[in-house]
Length: 224
Ligand code: ADP
Ligand code: ADP
Image (tube, rainbow, N blue to C red):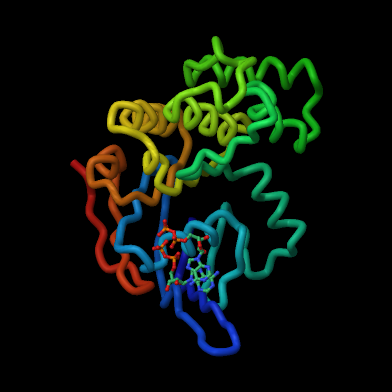
């Protein structure tokens, strides 16, 4: 990720809000970066841009060699599907589908055939230690278990980049730590991670904290 002077402005009839004001950020392959800052400073906006879910209004964003501003919507959707996994604070699992089916969904979108899907879903459920619950529905699981399923869904494609928006925000500390251990392990196995968090504790699992204020990055700290 090579972001230079990135700008994002939300416009409406009455007002416009500069959510990102010339943000620059480089993230190397294999890094684990935490983004912190007060509510409203632009963290979600940055994550949405990193996830190719929204367009910048200025600056440059090179993702995996592609200049995002010059890419077509189709190229961006393709890059998102192949290269990016998302984890949210609120899990965002589909309640009507089983654990297995939730995790299988991205592979169906990718056109992966049935036997290969089964194998990959089982592998990843084993990795997040929830395989014994594969036929349960999300509501039958604890919050920590649901988030582990959400992480499994995010990584079942082997994306290059994992984006997490307050992944432990709805979890107690023991479940939160389990999820952080899992993210840490996935990072060790090669995933690049950018995580928004309000938790200094969670940020210590990262390599580097980027601090934001009023739409700008104000400071970066290297973790020991
Ligand atoms: P966070 O928990 O990161 O602080 P927010 O509550 O700021 O998240 O934002 C949650 C969602 O609401 C985001 O997708 C963001 O884009 C959207 N949002 C935030 N502020 C506004 C706003 N003023 N108008 C419309 N949507 C907003
Ligand atoms: P954070 O995630 O750090 O809480 P956001 O990125 O959600 O911050 O918001 C940054 C700024 O942009 C805030 O002033 C917020 O109100 C505004 N904002 C975010 N999303 C929208 C939106 N969809 N429409 C209008 N304003 C928005």
